[in-house]
Image (tube, rainbow, N blue to C red):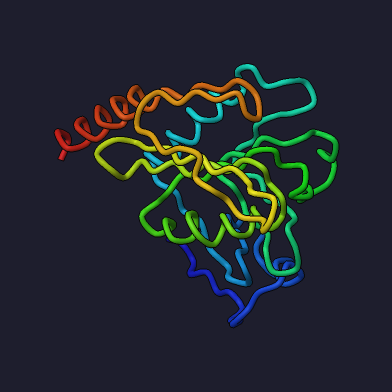
Length: 195
């Protein structure tokens, strides 16, 4: 039997308040809102595949990391699904958002608005040059590539695709979205047969 989790009640959370949380509780803090995380299979599958794709060709001094909290400010400690980091501050937890060269969010049913708007604004204001939003919920898995415009700091969508995605920024990366869609669909079909 699982005990019910009792958290302090707050209208607005700060990074300092996070010390009151159980140490193994998966959370992120976005603009003063505490969000408890509980990703599903498809979400985690896509995150893993993106991590592997980002690891290929990753230059020395950088590394992709899964589910890493970032130090953004007093009211935000986001946890991108996958992030490529400059490894200068690996001994710091959480590392500064300035070390992120690419943040990737994989949309869940309850995170789309947060990923597309709230986190995009936060990462842009912090100067993260590259931001991807991957949506595995549609008929085909899509990737929206956001690039930072310097003034004002905000993202513009450079492209959105359900096809094979290839870029040279921040280094050569290829994500085979049709292959991911096919594998996701095979998992879902198998699950439906098991019902």
